[in-house]
Amino acid sequence: MTKDNDKTMKFDVDKEEHNKVRDTVASVYNALKEKGYNPINQIVGYIISGDPTYITSHKNARSLISKVERDEILEELVKEYLKTL
Image 1 (cartoon, rainbow, N blue to C red):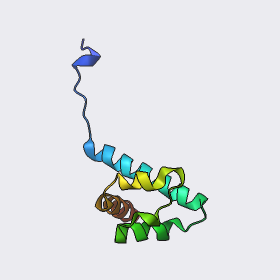
Image 2: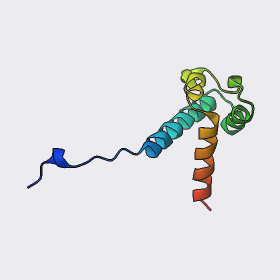
Image 3: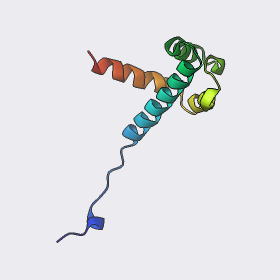
Image 4: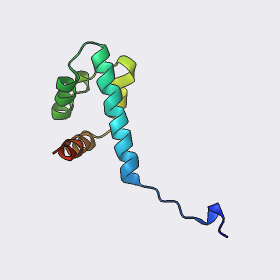
């Protein structure tokens, strides 16, 4: 009989990072939408320019998105898009 604490747990960094990016983009998207902005245009503007003023400060969205690297956001967006093909 094996004890539960004898099992090795696997920590998936990629999955954790994916969830962080996904949750951040979703929160920012919702904050932009609530403020009446076109969230797609604003997020694209931010990714291309790096200018945080494309993102509203409503619901702390600007601060949230600045904690994630732009290339990580772009990578996750491309991965998700390619899954639909």
